[in-house]
Amino acid sequence: MQWGDEGKGKVVDILAEKSDLVVRFGGGANAGHTVIIGDQKFALHIMPSGAVRPSAACVISNGVVLDPEILIGEIEGLAGRDISMDGRLYISENAHVVLDYHKMEDQLRENALGKNKIGTTIRGIGPCYADKVGRSYAVRMADFRNMDALAERIRKIVDYKNKVFGAVYNAEPIDADALIEKCKVYREKLAGFVCNTTRLLHEAMEGGKNILFEGAQGALLDLDHGTIPFVTSSNCSALGMGPGCGVPNQKVDRFIGLVKAYTTRVGAGPFPTEQDNEVGDIIREKGHEYGTTTGRPRRCGWFDAVAAKYAASVGGINEIAMMHLDTLAGMKELKICKAYKLNGEETDFFPSDADELSSVECLYDTLDGWDEDLSGVTRYDDLPENTKNYVRRVEEIVKVPVTIVGVGPKRSQAIFRNV
Image 1 (cartoon, one colour):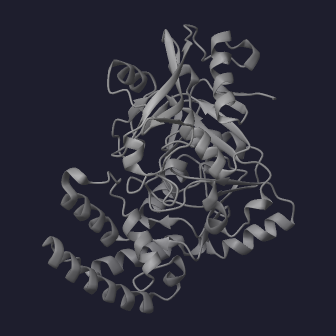
Image 2: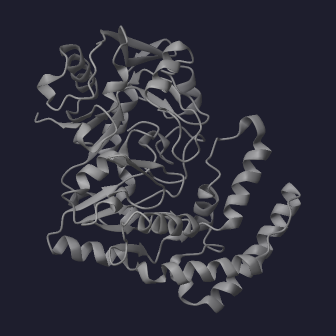
Image 3: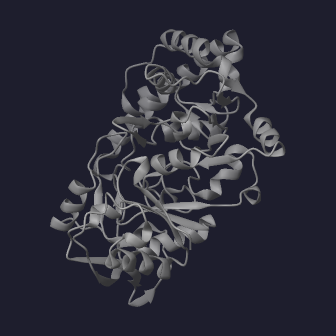
C-alpha cells in the first residue's frame, strides 16, 4: 500500500501455510521478497514467496515478466537447501520473457537520463513490458516450444535492437547467437514447468482450493495510479490481479494490504513525509532499510496515512497488515500525516501527479512513542498502550482495520488480531 518493501514476503509466507496455491501476478525480478525461517534467510525475486512452504504449489502467471536466468538460479538455490520445486511450480505460457537486450536498454536509458533518471533496478522490466505492449518484438514462454522459430525471431529482434542502440546510444552490438544458446539452456531447465496457468487456476477454484495471490512493488508505484514517471511498468496494486492471472477480483474474499509503521521509498520521486535527517537515519538503521534487490539505502519518513488511504480505496483493501512496529520503539514522539495542504487548501486525497505531490505540505498528528521492546510480544493486548494508540489512529484515518502487526522479521513475530 506504499512504495514497496512493506514486508510482503513475510506475510505471504505466513498465509501460505494454509494455502494450496500461491500466485505471483505481476512485476518481475525488480521485486525483492524476504522470508526468514529460523536462522535461514531467503531472498526471492521471481519465485512466489510461498515457495519455502513445501505444501504450497507456486504459480507464475501471465502478468509477470520472467527473467529465466534469475528464476533458474532461485530454483537451484532452493534445491540446494532441500526445497524442491518439482511438481509444484507452474509458469504461464503467456508470461513474457526478459532477455539480455532488455537489461541493456534499461541501463542505457537510465545512463542517458542522467540526473533525471527514474531510478529503476536495471533488471529490464520496463523494456520488457514495452515490448509486450508493442507486440512485434515480444517473446513469451510459449515461444520456447519451437526453438528454430524462436532463434529466427531472436535474430530479427536483436538486429532491430542493435540498430536502435547503436544509433541512439552508440552501444556495442548484442551477439544474437550467444543469446540463442542461452535460450536453449532456459528451455531445457524450464520447459517442464510451463502450462496454461489460467486454466489451472480456474480448475483449482472449481475444486475448492485455497488460493493466495501475491503482488509485487507497491500501490503507489502502479503504472496507472502511481506518481508517473516514478513508477514501475505494471499495475502492481490489487487492481492488477485480474488481468495478471485471469481470475476476476470478485472471486477473492479478502484483500490484505501491507504497510510499514512508517514510510519508505527507493529511487527518485516525490515523498511528502520523507525525513532526510536524523529521524530518517534512525529508522533506516533500526529497520535495516536497504533494498533486497539492489542493496540501495531506502529513503525513510513518517507514516503517510493520506497515501495509505488512497491505496486502500483504489485496491479495495479489506484489512491491513502493519509491519515494522518494533522499529519505532525508543522514539519519544511519532508523527502520522493525516492530510496535505495543496495550493493553500487542506485535502485528504492523494494526488498522483508527481509535481502536485512534490508541492504538498504535510499536516501531522503527533503521538507519544514507546520504549518497550516489542520483539517478544505475541498477543495484541500485551502491546504497550501507546503502540495500540498508534495503530488505532492509523485505522481511524485510513478507515480499514489493522488485523496483523509485525514485531520482527521471523514467522513467529506476526501478531494476528480479531477486530
